[in-house]
Length: 470
Image (cartoon, rainbow, N blue to C red):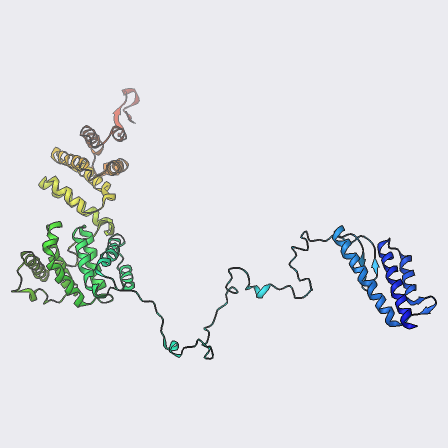
């Protein structure tokens, strides 16, 4: 009888739940269903049958709510905590994203922390600031090799061959001629594996300096002195100069004065103590090349003169960019005075080029004009104007430097007039002659300042002196 009652109850409960869920939901239906659970045809049902019935009703109601929520997007029925159906309109979700784009856990697990502690993601190697320790070798690893523990890994630079040597070292030396930093050259050479080509560094630097300016030769002598010790040894220096003496016949083809210049490099090296004093004596009696003999004789003469007070440490001079301004001004004044005495414009032009200060030629123009203003004869004015004309035609002094020199005199003429009373008058004459000779243009001539002349007014003014400019 009990099994028949259960079968009858389940059949009627399913029919009742289907009809209940397919129609309108109201409180009355819920009350009827609750009453029906406990009693059918006046017979009380057991607790197990009640729990089965309630579970099925809850499952049906949940499926109903899922369908309504997907259709109505937030509107419909919901279940209370005890599984009862609660009708009404739910609040719209605050997040604009749909459930498909929601990355939150569906199971409600986790504490909301980032994945892998913030070390996850594409292209991420780990947390920021994380330091990895060295991994210990696992001896149980099937790929473990005991010989690997004694291996030492280091970067190996292949040695330079003769073809790559000049291509690599030549740009380093040429850049050194621009910046003059010997420490940078030493660092760059230390990074290279020179190998047997180490002794050829001085000979390459000297051969490049032979075709350069005097200031570059001075820089080369300083470079050799600074490289000897940290990068090069004394034996490397001797081998390099031996190679230079052997290559003199080829160097003369490009630089006719190579024997004398190499002799000066040898004398400077002996003075800087990067060559032994007996280096020159070692060639006595076994020199066949005439160029080598000239070079060694030149070095020997300079070393004997150094004992009498000659300074070999500055025999090449100093480049214009490295000289103080006061020294440049003194040398320009000496140049002008020597030109007035000799009248050799070619020598003056050569000396001005040797100063290697094309950006400071306006000072030479300024000093030349001041010399004309302070002169007491027409000869000095004529010679200085001829020199300025020659330097302008040969483009040794550019148009801009010439203009700046004249403008500086125009600005300082008031102070010059204190020492030279007739400075204004002489300046006007010099400017007119410069324009007629083509040294300056009309615009620069018109900028020449004129001094106001003194004149007496009529006798009715009581002889008062009045200053006016015409």
